[in-house]
Image (cartoon, rainbow, N blue to C red; front, side):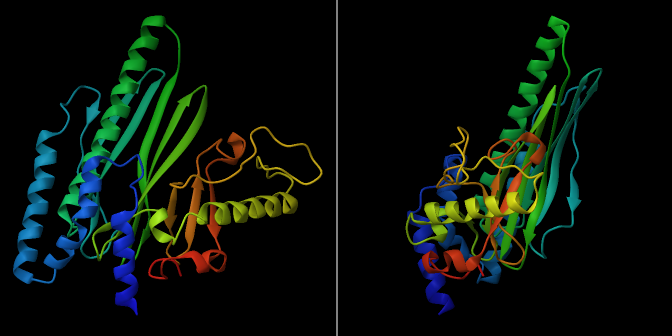
Length: 300
């Protein structure tokens, strides 16, 4: 039964559109996922895959971003992933000037047997943070010329889930300019099969958008009823509609799968609640979505 479910999942991954945040290389990696999965069953080919992984990682490190007085580079292993896959602190940008502070950590995944997926994810992480650093430096110089301002950015990553099968990596950016805002992005990987899991690929059709959205609204109302300090932008019975009221999740909404195998939907700061509420996460009860799941391979 498990093999049949896994095959069904694979077929859906190949048919499911990839979220816009992923570049074309990730899309290509998904299409090649099955080929790399077969390779791991041959010990001699495994040796070649590991060697290729090391070569790709070394090439990215060599190409890198040119160093500057405000740039610091580190390569620190973080023991947060299983026996094969690792998450590295690949680079770190540090700026400490009067009124201007940046600490931008660039993650890198190492040890995935699908080396093309590994490489494309790492290139994406490097490109995202290079852009963040360059934008910070440009804005800093502009503010210096104008003689005004305070600017800060803190970017890093956390490993939300690390099981024998699932690796969920969260990347955050905290921008500070008068007030602060926080955004999160997640990548959830099936380590055993070497594929990137998307939200649509977990479900049989598109009904998950409405079903999950209604459950989140219910959770919001229950939390507000239990604690008056909690505020969500959600319509309440007997009150006028809120202009910012949450209606439904995006088909490619930010999500990850936690250690217990539960689906967690994430919203950035200010997305569904006032800023003081911070980033908001909602654990979706499995019984709510069990009938529309492709399989119980990931969601328990």
